[in-house]
Length: 443
Image (cartoon, rainbow, N blue to C red):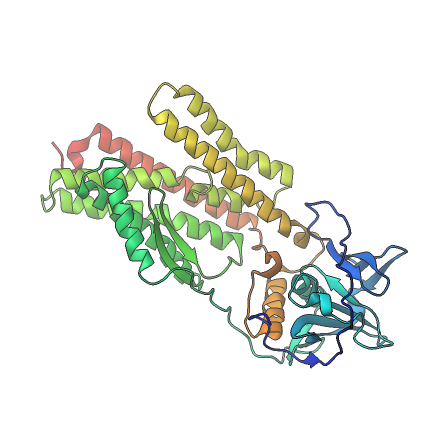
């Protein structure tokens, strides 16, 4: 039995003497994530289920039928006995009393599922990403959780559920060890002195806690801060961002720490409370590292803000905008090939290109949701309720998850203004320091 399948009503069924043959999924475009591939075990044919604007389209070998969203009266999450396993299933009941029965295709025990839940009932269709499909039906049909795995057209009767924290991957001693290794790698790989390595680490730590503070203010869970030797540090969220606006604000909160941290360093440095060497290094690293993070390349904070800003654009236009900084960085690489820094620029350009490509592939999973008229907040809540009813844990990331809601024009304008202010402020202070170092306490 799978560890995440411990709840919901169970249907006692006899498993067949001979398991049915492995399901054969219908071939669809790899980027068409709005098409849920399925198999009808009674007819032995491939089926394609697609949530659309007018209803739930079911493409079979012989015909296509559409279940109007308004005709969906109830959905119930349940478990079906399959030999020694239990497999999550859902029954969609229509106004005329007919039902659509679906279950998870790729899961332990699926090969022992019955072909029907009842002798005279409809086939128990095996579906890929069944939980996400069920959540889409619930959200688009306007159903509400009624408890005991049921969703109906009445008021919400089930209690709200909190998102279940991700299970811990690293032991408690791992983050402190990574912090120590990160400091030592700066000393031995980049040939920094211990004081300089400590200054870099403090800047990174303050930067990451800018992200932490923003997440806390937005009511988002924080898994923790993790140092990555030779790569910097990362703040790990506990859950997905509900809105692109939240994602962009959290991204820009890190570089925003450059201004108050630089001010604190200057106030300690000018009166001589810290040495010129330590103060100068700390000041330069504060401005330099945060300025670097504002470059609009993934996975830097500037790239994350740009990716969030362009989420509502057409795919071709979005790719053009997001990949443009990578092309410009490649041109900078060509201009600096004869310099030692050229290798570092080249490695980073290749890394940024790979991360951006992965990000676009991940976003392709979500593109269909924005096209068939579902409210993403309702879909996210429905997926949380479905996973809780099926397994006792509430998740928002199963079967590809739900994308954050795109920004409004006002939100996008606000993000661009904050980004511009940060860039001008950090670059302006850096230029002033290089031109007039005396005003910062250095003769």
